[in-house]
Length: 298
Image 1 (cartoon, rainbow, N blue to C red):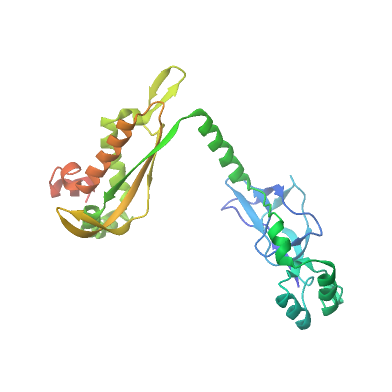
Image 2: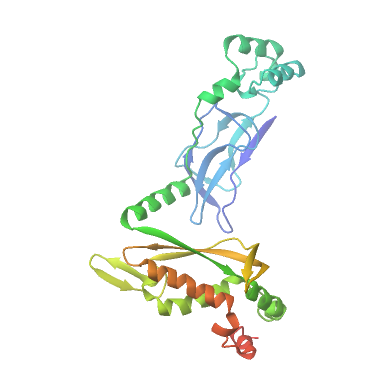
């Protein structure tokens, strides 16, 4: 079967893309799902993968601009189709079909091809143990790698952890989510509570927003020296006032530049967020339910 792989659309209003990388060449055998190329647009970098196993014929060159919807390549999946008898041998001997060249009609693998392969090659499973699988990085992954290495070399990064009980936030969301959705057309998510908590905590620990410029410290009105990671909420058993309870718990992780932020500040920052999230009526609404409705603009 001949399969034409089309150029996908990176987004609305994009009609043309550039071939930034090619990971295969004409005549190569490709596996289904294998990344064969990358295309760039003004909005994004996309990967193009093989839609089926077979021999590939490229219709483009690296650096060439091509319209969305045009044929990017052709995959001939007639090659490496095995006859019933050859399939049995391949399965019994654990031989990968892509390693066997078919000599039958249209490149079909026949019984004699499998016997010849078995005589001339060691078992495919042993080969795979010794061979390395090398996969090229996408453009996006390469850029991320470069940035991460650069940051690592220029900063002294540490991470501090804490955990927070989300029970009170769950109760507030349950009470107000329908009103909030009806008025604003969006869900009342957890991020809103964490954003407000961070604003309050940053007033106590302003260096979380600072950076080092040679011998000077510069404070900003946004995060610059730390990143707050919020992990998955999971029910866990915790001890509260001597009793074992099941609560929705979340791990918090603050990664920060230790050149400017000390352990005391990082721990204090997380403790303040924990305190606010676990006692929202006290620290966010000053124990006034009416004030909370005002904050949510209900």
